[in-house]
Image: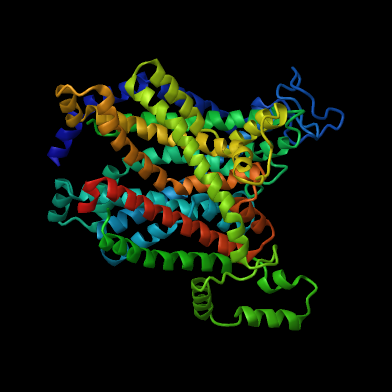
Length: 288
Length: 313
């Protein structure tokens, strides 16, 4: 135990400099700012949106951007700005709900098959091979076809396919960590498998998974809005960026701003998550 | 060249994988809501007709018999009849396959043309403004959904400026090239972002390698070093990456075909899903899986024939 304490103290200053290094990177800071603001918008859309996103005004249909309607109005006279703001709730929720269950399942399965190997690991290997043989979107769309379109079913579909990628990453990392002395020490000390896996191996093996998670959140927003655009994700009249772009598509030559603005929101949020991912990669990865 | 033995080993490994692929597709389609017999015969079919169809499709047999039927039929090239198209699924797929293949290869060619030179410029100017500019632009590109890139190109270059057609496939090779230009650029902008990142770091890695420094010390001209060592190594890693990201490429193609109304497999897949055409969904999912694993195999063979290190492992 005493050795562990010594290690922590000697590690602390190094970690501080690393944190300072990451904070000094403008990209990482920008990413944090974007995601911070996006989270605020997602949590309190009614504070920032001037109108009810579903309020229909037939007297103000497809108006160009103005002071009263910064992004104009759509074909039903709804305020486009308020709809983009309210969509933050749905799309930010997507980034979390489409990834977090895949993350948890993947980490547990990956850690277990990586630790025990044997027959379960062999079956797992075949499952991974089979799942990566499908294009991700094709499999997700096929699952959505089975369950029916809609947000909840979309989350289930993405989770059913996505956990494999987390598990594959986690398995490889656990196997690599088991080559270290501390894992052997745990075995010699007679610790239970559960303690070695979850208290010792998991905290050391999880770094690449967390970095991948950030990228995956950006991908989840891209995927979710693509499915919304195709009519398989969120359903109108719900305000979701993909749905909004699809709604504006029919008026793209006369009212192009209807589709342009939700797209910019997607790009910004996606960029925010990938910048944080890159920053975390620098922060958490052992220096080489 | 990769040895026959190696190829056979790779093919043998594909057998259990494909067995699982078939299981996944079988289970997916069995869980589709609605009765397949009703979907085929229509809502107004009589009970006797429905029973006859169920009998013909083997839907009254136990699950494992149904799976066996599905497996043996598929191996014999029989994927059933499409409800939507009213013809054999195999015929529909082979009818649309060339379009998707054309679009995919076109996009691969364009993305190499875009990413290749830019990666060299970025790598040779590492840390200076051209490098930063190129990397920022591609980072933004990676955050853009494919359908959005497509829609922007379609609106401005297609509908507004009328430089390119806004949909369709055309007749003959050059017409295909013209009609599929915008869709290919759409897919390529996304793919080139992935390639550029990888190619840039591959070039930098090779430039820093000892054998390149040795070649420099030997007094070889830079042009020769770039062509002989850097290009060859960068090419291997790019082709490998392209091969491994074929799934992403296909996903992008699927969405792009929908945006530009290109009559390929991707658009067919969405039509099949909205029509609940389960034999077609089944056939298409299988086709995508076969295409991806073929590309994986080719990538592997290409890599092992170019990189002697791969043959040893």
